[in-house]
Amino acid sequence: MSRTIWIDEEGEVRTIDQTALPFERRELVLRTLEDCDRAIRDMQVRGAPLIGAVGAWGLALALRDDASDASLKSAFERLAASRPTAVNLRWALERVRARVAAQAPARREALARDEAGRICDEDVACNARIGERGAELLRALAQRRAARSGGDGTGPAPLNLLTHCNAGRIATVDHGTALAPVYRLHAEGVPVHVWVDETRPRNQGAALTAWELAERGVAHTVIADNAGGLLMMQGRVDAVIVGCDRVAANGDVANKVGTYLKALAARDNGVPFYVACPVSTIDSGTPEGASIPIEERAAREVTHVDGVLGDGSRASVRIVPEASPVANPAFDITPARLVSALLTERGVFEASVAGVRAALGAQ
Ligand code: MRU
Image (cartoon, helix red, strand yellow):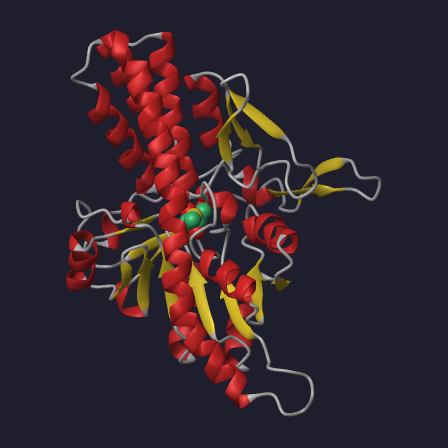
């Protein structure tokens, strides 16, 4: 089972509790709207496409308990507010609502379940396409890199990519967005190595990206968030590839906080900076990055670090003085001018008003 959300033999919705990774693979059963809302807020599930999928199932589960108009409205609003930056959540909720709103309450649960299932299936297909499209682009870089190296008996040097946060398999229903081309190249036998930003404060890179790359046998190295600039300056990064939580109409992108700094370093060093996302991440209703709501998360994510002790038990340790105030914006905005291209299931587009329009209009 490589999907991150599925229906088990009892007909229950199951997912993986990502707060237990990389130390334990724990499954979570989502039985109610409350279960889905909690899983999204507490980041047991995370990553824009997976949040959308869980939101869609949350609405279906709410309608199982109460299929009235009032229940549809309150469940929609509750789930939509659970994480504000990733537009895929609202997009998925709107799809389910549009499918059921005009129907009799008795039919709503079945239709909502069907729509949630479709959203999941489409996510898998979209990400497989992103993998193909992205691999085409990266293959050219890999060939150039291989032509420069080799001849010394060690074989071609790998394509070195740098990624921030986790936009892999477990951030989606399957395949991932930024990591989909990586898995594709790896499956083709192209030597590829990924620099994995740890991604403070929640360490999605160190904990999740490293875990899933290791699971698939992809060469990778975890680095401190601040190391990427030096590696780019030293010519040790061929391209940066990240996921995205929302693309504004002008091509500005919101992604995990710290992405902008990588884009600046990439531009300064002539390294291509690619943003991989399904078209459902494009929000034509948001004119520019400055209008994207940035989620502010709990101070505890900054003041404490979670991990395991030598005896294998889980621990959370404070690293900031009690008296120090803390801010924790979870995302930042990378201006379109720093983005080399948007990699979508419909092709590769410029990060610009024209590029975004073309992506939305393409089939
Ligand atoms: O806060 P998270 O872990 O949900 O943030 C995830 C990211 O920023 C990802 O890059 C983004 O959602 C794309 S996931 C394919």
